[in-house]
Length: 268
Image (cartoon, rainbow, N blue to C red):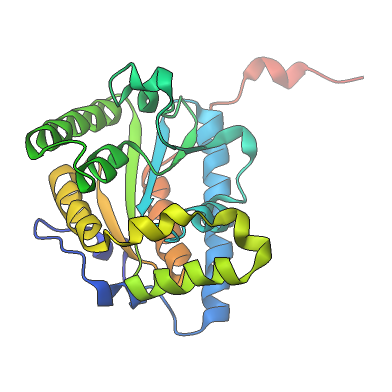
């Protein structure tokens, strides 16, 4: 069975469609895999409670992937047991008029975790080197300038107490087709469907190349990228939960020391 570091990207990272269906973390039994996800989700919630009480460090989880790759499902399946006091999810949409008046990282920096927080970015600053590049809104020179900005930004976060985990949710083109069609076929899921998703699908190959380049340029020991085979929703959650739990365990979190003065207090 795979270990968390097995999904770390390498210098020659490439997005290969067929690998999206792999299940290196699976036991081969879906019911057991779901049980393991639940156990890890509970453990992550326990660890986040200590992180929040400790109020010294921060955790930033970045979820990137094509439409329908499972960003929302990951939030529910892996992080849904955490006390709301210690967690925030930020979904980055198209920038507002006010946000456009500032540099592209301005709105992102405002949302990074504070002490004791776990923050999940559902999409992120990486959209500014993905969709902008695919549609030709920035050229190669500007794109590389932004890679440098992102590397510096993430290094600054890491050096000031933020643990960063970046996940590329890798689904195949056929799986996206099935998931989009499922939304169309189910009236209760029409609210999740946007015709723009069909237009963006036409740029599939361009997006794969943009992801490859962005991930290669911004992977770092202090801000690692993981490529998560995500055609299986259960496996996606299993892999991400494994990586997050390992990272949080490695932080060696601890509750603040007890206060001796409270020992004499008796509530009447």
